[in-house]
Length: 122
Image 1 (cartoon, rainbow, N blue to C red):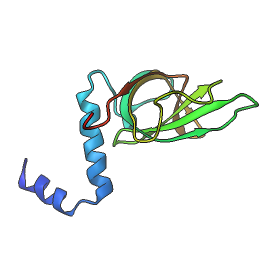
Image 2 (image 1 turned 180 degrees about the horizontal axis):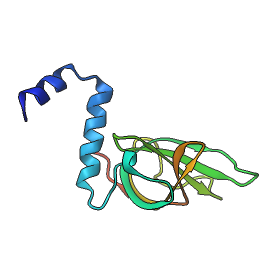
Image 3 (image 1 turned 180 degrees about the vertical axis):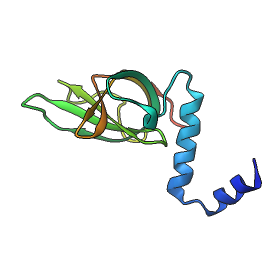
Image 4 (image 1 turned 90 degrees about the vertical axis):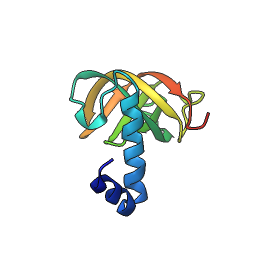
């Protein structure tokens, strides 16, 4: 680690430190792409931490929405027809796979395949 990196860590905010940790964790998961590099209409695998989970019906159909954060950006996950998914909760790490599309300018994956990963220390 260079002197510049050490100094940056000393003056970095908590949010910057957490983002660095998430980016480092996402890199360790083989085959994953950082959120900030995802393009519209591309298939991708992304690893990160779930920040929020919300039940929000879409056109009368239940839809479970979650926000995945990998340190480089956020990805919206939407499971249509689901009210809940066991284990999908804020703070949980997950690896997802699916087709990325832009919805209202936000990167979104509908009905992603997912793999829940252990929380740090588990």
